[in-house]
Length: 620
Image 1 (cartoon, one colour):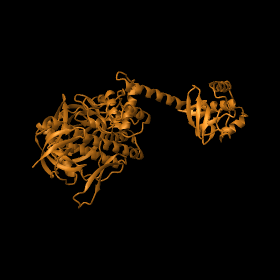
Image 2 (cartoon, one colour):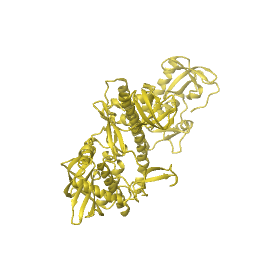
Image 3 (cartoon, helix red, strand yellow):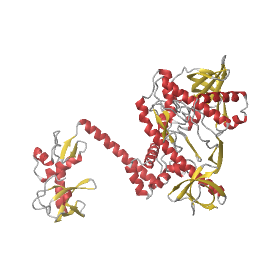
Image 4 (cartoon, helix red, strand yellow):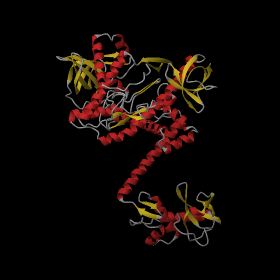
């Protein structure tokens, strides 16, 4: 922007003010050819400039010599004009000169440099100068401090990038780890991203390397996880959570857990008592709601992560291990706070009334599915199994095609991939599944009866009931809807608050209602949580699928090359075949010379890691 119009004789031999790399400078114009100026700068170097960039020019003309520029600049610096008061409507520079009665070249330049030297007091907008209020000056000062701190932080990160031996302070580690994840998720962190692009043509690769260097990774690299932007490491030191209620009653009986044999976090337990009328079945879920409040550091961790993540290379818990596997876990021989659901059964094992109760209970044992299946004939397991059959009979689940009975998960043990075969139809798993359905649907009914807003799990249907290709998808809502797969009028998740954020939210609502007759989150607040939760769930699912594909390829490369494999063609993707490998149930991309039928046999001979494709030959 010009502060003074071009003189009739042009700029030759005038001293001008202009910006160069963000800094206001002066120079002596030695020559003008049309709109192009040749300059003698203060460091005696020669430069070229478009006349459109001139901000202010002297009226006088000077001898073309460094001394002319030096002498004029000393004259400008010797002047200390009073900083002007500017009315709220603003003034142009010409109006400011007139207001201050400034006509001499040095005084005019001194005013310009004075205004620019005090951005905390003055700013320019639409060719006018304005004066900041006291509050605006304080805001500007704080913003400048923030900018300076940001620049210092980026300088430390640059040193860290340049020198492998350089260390980052703890606060910088947390910040850069967070910002690297944001970049991977497509969020804007422009200054850091620019710094990374200057260091590498492939910023994503550099980010993955940096995350590993910061410890924000598993012990064994998982490309799908590393490039996902999902949080991995916990950087903060969290104080142990304290119970908010000291007079929580203790149950006069114990409970036991049933989970996978390699489980590290136990969030639900079962109890069975004899009563005069029959039996009382208890389902007890670790009561995190007594420990956490919205806005606390642990709550924010759960909100960011949404759920625990179980991959071949390791577990990324939703909460730090000292809580998920320690303080909140229902560990045997310890008394733990739980949110219990009790259901009474008569002598014929017909279910009756239910009760929701916050209490403490002693955990007698942590059992595995395998151990319970082996001892399923024991009276206690037999009784509970019959109770779950009675509970299931009360539901009206939609008939579905027989699903897969076995699933396979890979686990890295001492660097070797070990497949784990899980029987989904085992007696113990089906019993526990029915108990969890009962707990979740009972809390949903409790919420409806108490007009308590919760995050319900509903089902949307695509297509008509007569359409064989009808599709279903689950979604969260604060309004309950019929759940055809479960066969209930309302359904939600609340049995795994250690592992799922939605369960934690629902538990906090119920617990607060039991204790105070109110809830933590309004319906609007819950609705506002849903988009971010569902977005993160989608990212987690996509990451798990990519991770499964990677480890399936690893397993094939290590164990199954040049051996006949069976596959089911699921789709064609960019000339490659997306194939489900049997019996593993994992999908990979397969490159074949000929199109396969729906069910086929092939021999794999190579893994193309660059394209993440398995190459093979079809067996006729």
